[in-house]
Amino acid sequence: MSTTTGPRQKELHELLSRDMVDIYVGDENTHWTLHEKLLCHRSKFFRDVFYKKTGNKNQYYGLPDEDDGPFRLFVAWLYADNIPTPHEEKDLGPLLDLYLMGEKWEIKKLQVDVMDATRRWYHDSDTLPSLRRVQYIYSNTTDDSPMRVLMVNCIARMLVFGEGMPTHWEKALGRNGQLAVDVILAVQKWKLDGESVPDAREEPVLPIVEEAQQKAEIKKEEREGEDEEKHNGETSDYQTDAGQEQTEGEETETAIEEDE
Image (tube, rainbow, N blue to C red):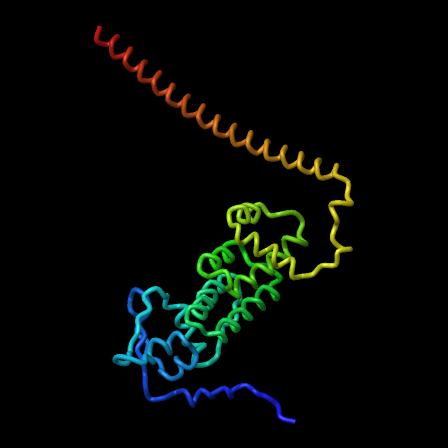
């Protein structure tokens, strides 16, 4: 029986041809010389840049909007299939920039490798994507971004099984309708057993009303606290101004008495 296999993956030495291309990165135009065949084999974007069917063949290309650090990670991945293991949360920043390169340059394997490193970090550290990281990905990707899906799936689990809604996430979901929709769609894909999910049609409504009243009271107290702080600040400013006016008045009276 014959079996169907995919195309054989080329070894690195097969892609290290003599032809080289020059890449200039960032505001400082950091110069990189890379193997053309390797770069174009990995990326459809760069194939379109360097393998034009018409006109003179390009030998250089500028990437002024990219940063040196993430591009250095890209070169390491390009030649060694290496994705650095993050050791702390701040290490995710350059990795996410590397992932965005994978999307822009149409490199599926790079996207998968970075996503897997990111997933392992959150799993091993028992943490979840921060709002800052999620917003960064949403600001720099389109609706069908795989990294969006990974992060939203993580956050959806936290929102469903966590205790209450963190305030910063509540505000973010209120401002970003697409993020809220993505969270709902992620939960729908879980196909939860209906027996394990409360049915509002069968539950008493009194707890709903009481919870709403409690939230209203909390918000009212917060507003009153803010108003009081604002009033105290204005009173303090008024007293300061009044004190200055009184001092100036006393100084004027003293000067008049001395003149007399």
